[in-house]
Length: 343
Image (cartoon, rainbow, N blue to C red):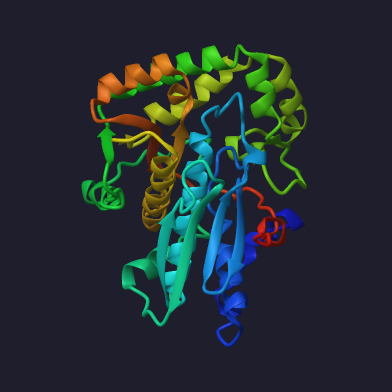
């Protein structure tokens, strides 16, 4: 990869400082944590190392007040980073223990991750670790291939935390209804200028030097068009091409999945992210990629419609799964920008 904003992806397992201090070793683990997905690549996390543990904070300065008003997606993103940290820790011989919201859910301290040395890596976790640098979201198109049922069952086992459920939808009628739900959400949200401006500031040209946001090559936008697209997105309602793209990702996928929960709070959203990232890493083993559709869940009326259809708790995320070609990943903030000293 080229560009300073992509250097985070070049982390090498062989550079692990096995003979270094605990702080040096834990800092190295964070190089894998920051490769987690986040919507829309805002990377809303901060970390503090102290002793044998890492404090994980939500970076609320990266919140999206019009796109994600409850911060549901933000906390799910932090949960994904915690999952990568736990997988990397287990791989390098630590026993990760996660304590969520030790100061309560109103605090921006999301978790304390205790990393006790001396654990032997588990084979399954070895497999997940090797996928951290291979995992990416697809936002362009799927290939015409079906995911085998045994793979879907294996992925579902990652949604094993209490109160979390995964529902698969693969029939044409379900896809039609989900595509309609997503389309109506786009029509409502993209008609609002404040929504477009909030999301549009995270769109990037294909030559971006920014360390965050979504380069438009991930959506299949040609280089020349990518230059003016972010500005155009902010000023004009482009719901029609967005709906066309998402409809393709829904109808052409192998299966849709809906993640639902018994509870609906910051702890639940964080745990959703933790479980989801483990599922995504497991999917990457089989070259299965995901695309996410959180738009209907951001609108109370459409969320209730989805809730009635699934009838299994609070909907937190809709995503499609299918076979897709590898894609260049999105940029990442340097580790130094997300490590803080705890006061």
